[in-house]
Length: 187
Image (cartoon, rainbow, N blue to C red):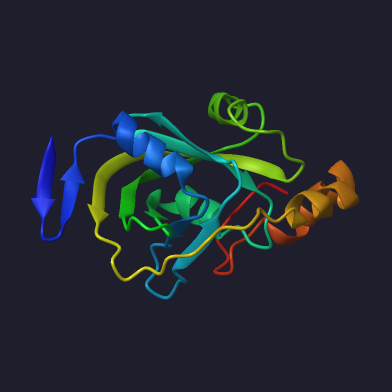
C-alpha cells in the first residue's frame, strides 16, 4: 500500500520496481548519529557494486575500509540509520529507508550472505544490514541532473598496495574508535 505524505509517499515495502530503482543508483548516502547530543552526526556517501535489497523490508551492503568508522560505531551503540538514494538522471526522485542497522564481520552469516552477492573487494571490512521500518520518497526536483562517468578505483588500488596485513594494520589504527570515542571494529 502507498500513502501520500505531502509531495512524497510512504510505502509498506520495497517492491520489485523500487528495488530495481534503488539498485540502479550509483551513489547513495548513509546517515547515523550517536545517542549523545554532543556527538557528531555522520553522513557518508557510498557507491560501487555494494548494495542489495535482501527482502521487502531488509537491505544490506558491503562496507569498505575507510578513514573512519562512524557508521559502524553508531550502529553498535544504537542501531539508528537512514539511507538516502537520489536520482541524478532526468527523472527526479529521492527514496529514504529508515530502520535499525546491524554490523556483521567475516565469518558471520549476514556477512557471508551479502558479500556473496557482490564482486570481491580487498577493502571489505564488514557488512551492514538494515531492518527497514519506514520507506518514503519525495520529488527530488531540487537535485541537479548529473552524469556518472566512471567508478573510482582508488580503494581497490590502495587495498592491493597495502595487502591483507597492511589493511588489518590500517583498520587497527583508524577503525577501532569513532571520532567521539565510541567502539568501532575490534583491533
